[in-house]
Length: 339
Image (cartoon, rainbow, N blue to C red; front, side):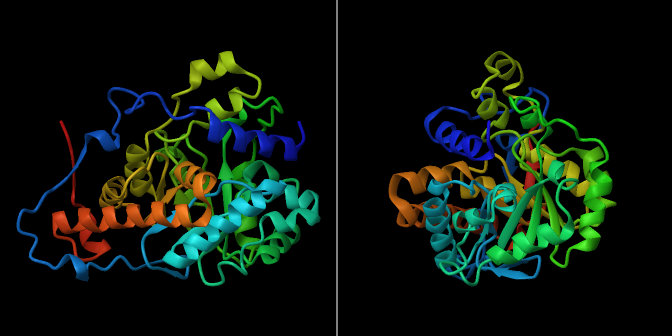
């Protein structure tokens, strides 16, 4: 299947099929948001209106610790999707990630499907390439792709679980850490690593820390199962077996924070501002959301995306009020794992 056809199928399946993780905890003995509590403070001693959500991520200011995660690019329908999301992010002063830029590197004319800078001139914008592509494209090609869309950083996505289900069978992950370390040194823009929805554990986080990446996006199990998405394109039996495979987002945050001193993005099943508050309490710096943003865009364009993300931000502010945290730093450590 061509890159274009694959991306079209991904959008269709994500919007029309139920591809969420089926088990809330993804394993009985694993830590998930369901068994994380925030410590309620009945007398918070602060004015909710004065709670400060501002933060910084890789040199860019955010008005709230939130970003619309990488969704798409490289197909005609991606142009409106990306622009609608970008407009909403610009209005709210939050970040955005673009889908894999492999398609536009292969075919530069597809740049327009990623072009959002005129709609969102000030926000943090992440470019994107798969870790298995690092051996195919050199630093100059990747740098050109980032400059073409005005990206502030490069997100390198790792997706072994997803790749194992893909009919294209792009499963050669040998020597990828060396290639990652090389691109980190060669690019002028900061580089961070993101999973696509099945989590990053302690061992991988330790290895990533040695490459010089500036951040890790845990993209844990609990939201969209990309095993499910790609198995529905051709390997349904295998997909049923591994549908819920991965490390839950909450557990992934804890493991990554033990090994990594840089920024951590919590994504993968973040479905409310309360989830976001728990994630930051566990050690994340910002939170990312993908599928609900796409569904909002499909339902009502940029206005619907903005409305949905405003709700998330207000829920986060409320959670902070209820634990007595006047800023994000004070939210750290406000979590408790249930027995």
